[in-house]
Amino acid sequence: MEQTRPSLPIEMRLLEAAIDQFGREGLDGASTRKIAAAAATTMSAITYHYGGKEGLYLAAARYIAEQIGQRMAPALAASEAGVVRGAGPDAATKALLTLMDRFVEVMTDPESERWARFIVREQMDPTEAFDTIFATMGVVTHRIVALVEALAEGRCDATEVRLRVLAIIGQALVFRTARSSLLRLIGWREIHADGVAAIQRVVRAHTLAIVHCSFREADQ
Amino acid sequence: MEQTRPSLPIEMRLLEAAIDQFGREGLDGASTRKIAAAAATTMSAITYHYGGKEGLYLAAARYIAEQIGQRMAPALAASEAGVVRGAGPDAATKALLTLMDRFVEVMTDPESERWARFIVREQMDPTEAFDTIFATMGVVTHRIVALVEALAEGRCDATEVRLRVLAIIGQALVFRTARSSLLRLIGWREIHADGVAAIQRVVRAHTLAIVHCSFREADQ
DNA sequence: GTCTATAGTCGGATAGAC
DNA sequence: GTCTATCCGACTATAGAC
Image (cartoon, rainbow over all chains, first blue to last red; front, side, top):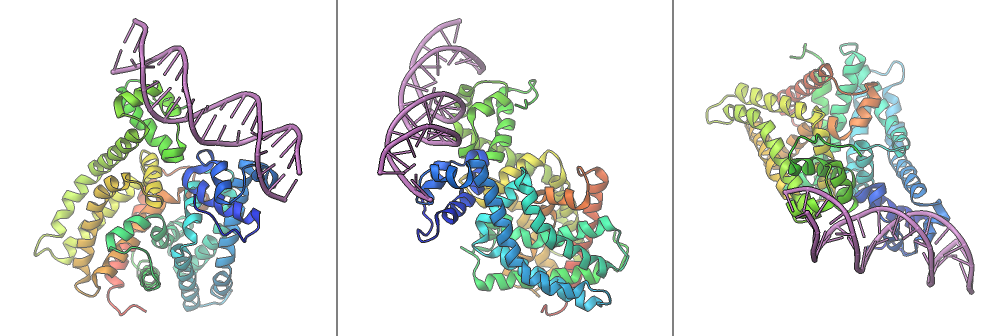
């Protein structure tokens, strides 16, 4: 049983261990005993601090949402300049690239590995915890929608803009969700700083190509 | 407990139920009793037919790989024309779009929902079953790599081509892995035939923009 | 606050009936 | 081949010691 740093307060240790275990095995599958052991405490600490297994699960979701929100906040604030009235396409493009750059960083960060397991599981088999996570991720998504909407200049309807945004985000997300395939395909053992930069260059180039080239013509 | 069609042979019913349960709860988390109940049989049928829980898990992985292989086979065969010696960029582009179109279809197909849960879980927390699935998905990925490599005409190194291919595939994959977010963002209740066509148009337009525009300049 | 002890349920594997 | 019966370990929750 891998243990978290014993210096942290017990509630934090429980949260960290919970994210890991729930992410791997789900709400039903995970065992409170294992979580407690990984947090170097006993099962009844979960009852005391979180009221039980489900309370811990929801607390883990809130914690993840909070962490992601904090990490995206600076880039989100910077992207404000791209959506203010009168901002030109260059400002919107720059804001979009800033958000995507940061998103790639968060997606490739080793710390996001455990969050990602938790989130992806919720995406594919949602519980009430999904509301919590979607509330945070939705802010970023909606900002990107606003930016792409501005860049489309009326050439796409609202649905198409949203589908395009999903596809754009998917480019970054895949480096998290298909991590194992990535490592095998390229022959890396893990994603180093150079790798992150390379991924950012690719996502940036693709995003630019999409917003600069694919709106122009009547597609297909 | 949802039951599979009772007309199918017991091994098939077990496989279908296993994919569903293992996909949601993982190898450890899922219960052979529940799987057996969903397959309208008893737990010891799993022992008899698959030797136990783990045997059933691996059989489920093989079954998924087989199903995906079958569904991608026609598009994969058609894409052959894009990689033969002397095929021009138009043939390669056409082959790439054919593969992506089909991939979107498979990713949005309701039947792929349970496969996807299983596969994504393996991606993020791989067991030996990942080898089986990667063997099949890898064939498609490598074909796309070959096509993009041809289209890049030496302007990207091998690693960059692979990162670009991952990003391109990610555009389609996101409609499976972030399904819940998609439905909320667009306000759909499910993905209808019109929705699939719209997603295909977007992925096609983006893929074209990427291979036609983003290789041109020195990116960033 | 954090622990130990215990109760009651459910897990997978197996033996053996038919 | 498919089922029932049974074993034993692991699970969550709870009560209560300190």
